Image (cartoon, rainbow, N blue to C red):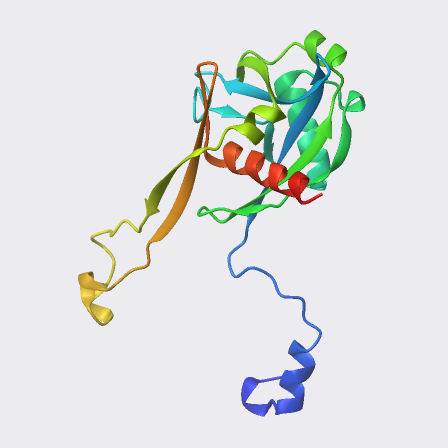
Length: 209
């Protein structure tokens, strides 16, 4: 029906049961915060990224982008097997922690999982993606407060943008975003960024119980 012929009831019929979606199409990612038990102590399983991948040398959990017709839980399991060499059948998914909306039109859903240390120590990581696997006791993060630094995200102003069409022109007060970045140091490893945020969120949820 042409818009000029719509009445209020017709508009209401269109919107009343509509499920809202993001204005921009979001890419979806999943990661797996693996926990294992080593020497009778619960530990996170972390890995150091290889030099030939994006963000080389970063400490992270395994994860990646969701593929077609794949549930996010399946994404987390698949990426963990591909990166760390841990068979999916040897991983128990315990649930989800809180997700993050990124600056890059993406949403990242962390899952929490368990793998036995006997399985972990026999796994062979993909050397093209992972330089090292190591464990960090949960107690370390509970007992060690992170260092916190503010990161400022602001738009890059391209010369081709039509500033003359907006009030203020190039001096328009474009929004900035202040993001707290967390840093932990553990035996020569710097754990920061989204990985540190996920760890802090999981500990927060655990402490609530």
